Amino acid sequence: MSELEASVPLLAMRGVEKSFPGVKALRGVSLKLHASEVLAVLGENGAGKSTLMKVLGGAHAADAGAIEIDGQAIVFQSPRDASAAGIAVIYQEFNLVPGLTASENIFLGQEMTIRGSLIDIAGERRKARSLFQRLGMDIDLDIPCRQLTTSQQQLVEIAKALAFDARILVMDEPTAALTTREVESLFKIIGELKQQGLGIIYISHRLDEIFQIADRVTFIRDGENVGDSTIKGLTRKAMIEYMVGREIKDEFPKRSVTIGETRLRVTGLSNSTTVKDVSLEINRGEILALTGLVGAGRTETVRLIFGADKRHSGEIELDGKTLKIRSPSDAIEAGLGLLTEDRKLQGLVLGHSAIDNFGLPNLNRFSRNGFLHHRLERQEFQDYTSALKIKIASPHQRVGNLSGGNQQKVVLAKWLARHCEVLIFDEPTRGIDVGAKFEIYTLMNELVAQGKSILMISSELSEVLGMADRIIVMHEGRVTGEIQDVRYATQEQVMELAVA
Image 1 (cartoon, rainbow, N blue to C red):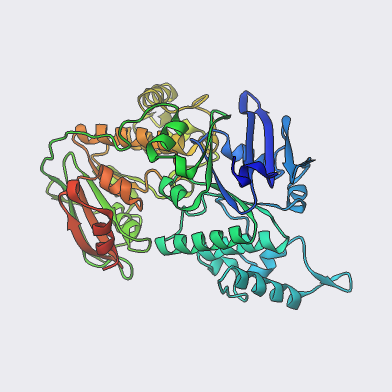
Image 2 (image 1 turned 30 degrees about the horizontal axis):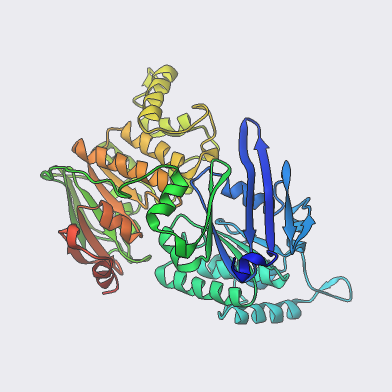
């Protein structure tokens, strides 16, 4: 037994249980975290990770079980209790007030005062500046947080935790919207926080990151512990099998599809700033990957193709016919479908039911004499629910309550119901667990086998190399290269083109 394993853990959660109406979310989950350690907590969407962290953060009260800090049992009645105990949770959606500055956000609700009532603005700014120096970064304290980059906003969240002596830091999908360079900076900061004695719980679906940053991994599946291992004792294959509970022989399912004629041709596509003379072709039965670093202009390019933004020049052809796309409705009518990068803000109406979201782009198909034919809509939705294996209690369940993978499948179902010939997948597996990723990949393979064409944007190079038939790389709004034989391509080759 190592010295670390023998010591009293900084944090211990023992036998934690939590139920919601009709759902047993946690079934006696336990974990340990030591000071100066990064513990990765892994599991599929819906496994119970978020619920466990909300119990730790005081947002949920456990039905049973115990939480110990330095060996002492403690009970949280609210997030304020957890904060007072030295626990800080940084959620994927930051808890910042956009109109306030960094220092105002750091001390919001716990302001420094002088003479008992006046806010010590100068004192807050001094301490904020000291905190950012501790993190090795310089943040402008005079601008509202809405003007900061995503990585800078994340630093504000970390500074909030350090301002009140957090010893336990939970980070949920912290790199989801960061560039490669920003991820490297974050990992450097995490390393420094470890040296300062903090214990860090790290949640991510990006398995490559886990091998870089974690010391140990705890696996949760269906609300239960299913494994615990040091990172040195794990392979990527074993990690995936722990999470999904079955053997996955190939993370990226292979297919044999005959590539056909050109379906979509884009020539000289430009806008005024971010897209510059982009040309590409997609063939029948092909998955074409469009990749590059964040800010390369990938999403902006497909938004121009789909008519979501105005293009200044360029032509778009489908099956040899020039398309006049002025709006998304024109693109949809022509047979294009777009699964947006941000499904929650742009792909779904979270407050509405799954079947309502499914029906939105298909109202003309499900309407008779101006009235919605509910039975026809319901039958087709049930067909897609079965075909795509959407896990849902009822068609009328709020889509915002579904897991990320099932939300993505609802988005996919509504476009399949339109019988789109060309589907654009913008970061199709972002925030989705390994098991759901495999299902999405399998569906993509089935679509191209039917003769459809897929344009896939992805920042995960392993996904690009594993799924694409061809790769087009962009940098600063321009196409910098094309890789035609993906079988022999490497991540280094793609990155060389991405930074050209």
